[in-house]
Image (cartoon, rainbow, N blue to C red; front, side, top):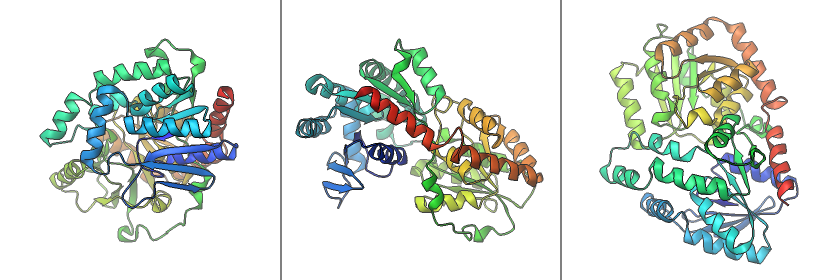
Length: 398
């Protein structure tokens, strides 16, 4: 596996590795190295090789430009090539688009098969990720190199050249089949469902001690313009009850935090909307479990209409109702599981209406919470089902 980030921050990668090792796959993981991390170690049957290729934002930006220009990362290529030959590796499983070009060269030179694991709709996501960036250097770099047109060109090569593609949701798979002339059997769906290990976190029932007597809406996740958190903030101004609180748990760029802070202040919501910043993953279950409703207010765009976040399934597994925007995957899953309500994306008034409906109906909240828990632990949206699709894919390539 090759991963253009550090490990184990990405929980999707961690879940896939655990399921594959349980299925007796031997994995060598090649990832980035942080300061003070060792270059080589083994843990739980996994061997990790870490390389130095950007430990600062400037270093990472440099390699972004290299991969955008040539669709290859020379440091990853050299190290991966040596590991393939040393361990007689047959499959290169590459996470997300930027490193697929490197894997395709390894395929040509070493005869390996390539799995392209699409965490995101990368080309369409780029302008969304950078929408709130204000620095002119960053904006110029993104305009020249991290633009949708350039990366759609690389995506076409990646999709056509890979031996197998993993999509995170049915809508992403359908989108790939519409865009490119590829065999449908080439694209599998391994969704961002959650392992029941998530339930084993310690529950802190005092996590909202500061918000006693409040009806708590919790948003847990990253901050950025495409996440729609600004819609939820604006929607709070439409809700009359002073007891309703929106608690935002998660980090983001300085620009994202500054924009949300500005909105909260402009709407006089500082006593009802709270930015708690980044919190350890070990607290995520508590924040979701002890909330009254978990919200996922994603905006409708090419990224969100063809992807699905981990936090949807985590929120459902926490046994509390979810309030999601009308993005197709969110709406389909929540309605199929009868685990929550849907509001029109980017519509703060509709967000407020659905909050008030949930706030007024405790029995509905309980029923939806129970439905979500069952769907994610033993039903259609369990990680066990996703893991079977992953291991079956590997068996077809061996």
